[in-house]
Length: 358
Image (cartoon, rainbow, N blue to C red; front, side, top):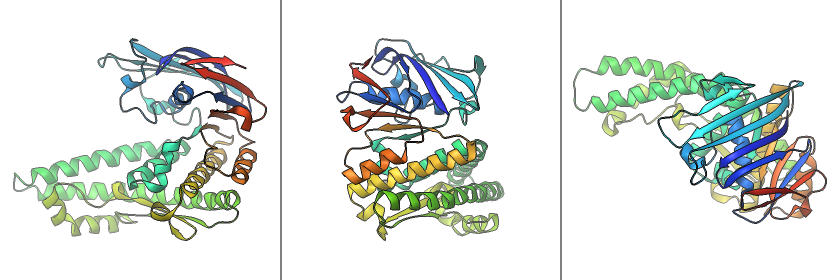
């Protein structure tokens, strides 16, 4: 997987930019708030169909513009391909998506087309943040590797919404027990399937990330374990829903299930969320991201593109050297205030949303 070029128009603070990527390393250097991360975001949007930080599509559109667009050319499976997206400020207009010139109705058609693994400082929340952050990380990595799992995730979400609606309605209307039992069965089935897929993925992720972290941190111990909230089998999940029904009726929502799954991360034998230092947290997330890239390379048969935002800050010299050598076999697009830490490749100076190759 090789990104060849990207054309960006009216995206964030970027009025217009056309970048050619080096097959090994491309560095976007400049001061903060000049547009470096915005360019990485544009590449990620082409991969995933949505931003990793914007709540609304209109947030991606440059002030004063009616629409923003991204056109990414890349090489995969031995042939050149293209992804095009356009977002509109007018909420009545749906975004446009094209793959190799063919219009697409769903963003899901993008998954697996252009594989990119992203690291941004906000990903430290995977270690120190709420369970939702860790579930999102696992689900996005799983979806990239196995796009069919997205359907399972969506079906579970819809079943959960329906069961929660019945729980709330049961406070006002009698006789909804049969309907609630029906949604119990559906949620238990989908939840057990989803948790099983997450568990299998996390087992492989744990093996890879342990190895990477040990190399990165001089042998320091790292562990990752999947924690199932709703039962490992359909029968177990159904039994849990029955046992918690009284509590669910009282609060008006489903208190146990795959939507409460978590991943336990430990560093040096201690809970990473509570005890890991800033440097350990950053090393842990880097190990998880590199492990994700390894698994994606195994499943896709070609390495993904690494998008690394300010990845070297707060790492000591040894960890920086390891990371730079470890990712050398994959294409990298990185941001930095100073490009001197990197050697070779292509360098763009970023200033006020403009990009000038050096």
